[in-house]
Image 1 (cartoon, one colour):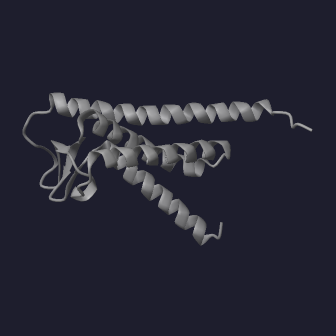
Image 2 (cartoon, rainbow, N blue to C red; image 1 turned 30 degrees about the horizontal axis):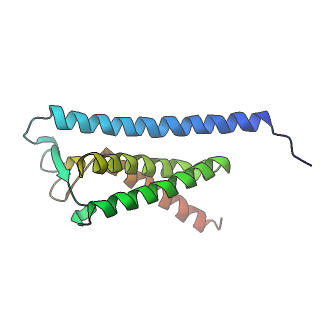
Amino acid sequence: MQESINPRNVKNFKTRVILFIILIGLGFLLDRLLKYIIETRLPTEELFIIPRLLSVFLHQNHGMAFGISIPMWLIISLGIIILGLLGFCMIYSLIAKRTDWFYPMALIFTGGLSNLADRILYSYTVDYFYLHPYSFFNLADLMIFCGCIIALTHYWRKKQHGD
């Protein structure tokens, strides 16, 4: 016997899918807009946000995080595979109504998608924040970092409570 489909569940699922598309779209567009503004409108000199600590400065990152050098074809291939897996996990979390995992994955996915777009279009990522004297990063990197921190915090809390 086939179970009937509850229209309320269908509506809630559609709402989650729409939220998913909006969240990823806004994050992606904001990072792309910032990268465009930085590349086309930023003066050539460094603009300090917090003196001697954080500044805005255009940097073309041809490697990976922490200066790791990997061939571009491998970075792009791994990026596509990882984004595909994340996309699958996000869809599963929506279907399973596990939005506690959805949001951190959406942040990671959005940041990864924007950086992957840079690598495909330019063969580098457009970084524009400089944390003195450590590294350059962009909004996409912040989304990835925050998504990872949220996911790890969630995992540790669930593990602590035996869930």
